[in-house]
Image 1 (tube, helix red, strand yellow):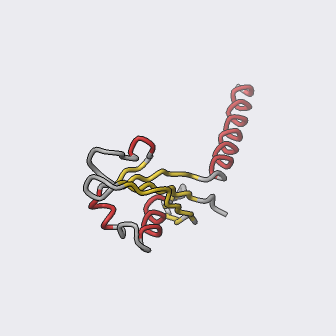
Image 2: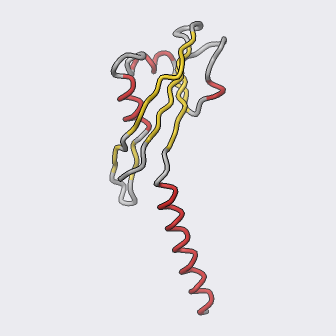
Image 3: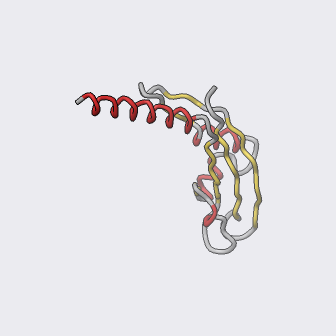
Length: 113
């Protein structure tokens, strides 16, 4: 029984350390906007938005980056309290075609301090 308690204690510490270590890393999303065929970026994205969704968050204008960061970099703690992580948003490329073309952004959610 003592061996079982020791193993549970060690495993609990290891789990806690793994959670702390993983929370210290950036979280990255490749976000593709666009729909239809053609040279879509959807194959290289983790999040896809339709043209209507892209227009609703600014369509590439000044409101787009804050909208992407707010949408993708919200986290909840163990008590269910919501927090907004700091973030960086980079426009990678835009290609013409389809309804609104295809635009790829990378959103990086920065570790909590």
